[in-house]
Amino acid sequence: MSELILRADEVHKTYHIGKRTVEVLHGVSLSIRRGESISIMGASGAGKSTLMHILGGLDRPDAGDVFFEKTSLGRMNSAGRAAFRAKRCGFIFQSYHLLPELDVRQNVLLPAMAAGNRRDAKSRAEHLLDQVGLSGRMDHRPAELSGGEQQRVAIARALINDPELILADEPTGNLDSHIGENILNNLFDLAQSVHRTLIVVTHNEGVACRCQRELILKDGKLEE
Ligand SMILES: Nc1ncnc2c1ncn2[C@@H]1O[C@H](COP(=O)(O)OP(=O)(O)OP(=O)(O)O)[C@@H](O)[C@H]1O
Ligand SMILES: [Mg+2]
Image 1 (cartoon, rainbow, N blue to C red):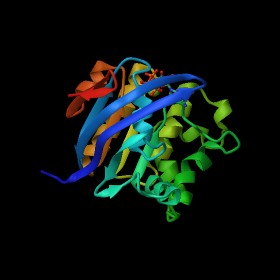
Image 2 (image 1 turned 180 degrees about the vertical axis):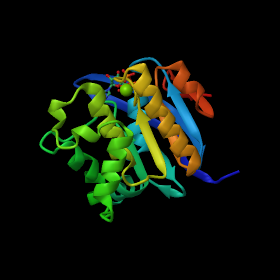
Image 3 (image 1 turned 45 degrees about the horizontal axis):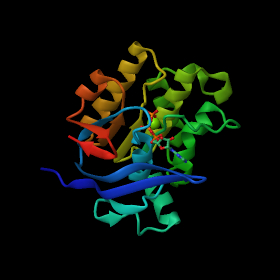
Image 4 (image 1 turned 90 degrees about the horizontal axis):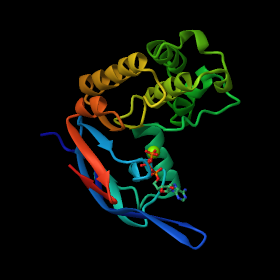
């Protein structure tokens, strides 16, 4: 069996809004091996995006920790976490997070610049945009694209540094089933062929079925 790439250990997260508290994660533990594909399902508001942000080092848990290989994300400083995100991890956000003032090609190039991975970056960006069917849109700004097109830009951007760990938060939520299926097939093929690790949050049973392990987030805990 391949080694562990990611481990969550008793992760807790509570949000405080004024006097109200929302307990979202109550001790989530998870071990993922390199090359595995995993789906996470659960009701809206169950905490799936919260968990993904913590697994990717974008947010910190109140208690518990996440380990990438053997390194604790909790003990890294923010510069260390930023470097981890830039170099090792590709994030496809539920709400795209494209930069409005940059065109499509520049958005995809951004993580390559952040990671100092400039070699052939432009041709890699264009190849990825071609793969997601956006070769004709490279000079457009995000505001000129449909939701599904923006999501495809976000997918290309997540793959530009060929990350070992791909975190995809409802990557096909805004795509029609045909394009969504194509893109997911690409993601799964890529993950398998080069032994990349893929965590996909989805509401789609068909997507979940394609993963080696299916998890459900319920009452703040993960069930296999
Ligand atoms: N920054 C925040 N501040 C306060 N509460 C938050 C914050 N982010 C999320 N929450 C709350 O935490 C809970 C979990 O949110 P989260 O976005 O993780 O759910 P989700 O499972 O991804 O839902 P969906 O399927 O709708 O995307 C929700 O009740 C939400 O209102
Ligand atoms: Mg979500």
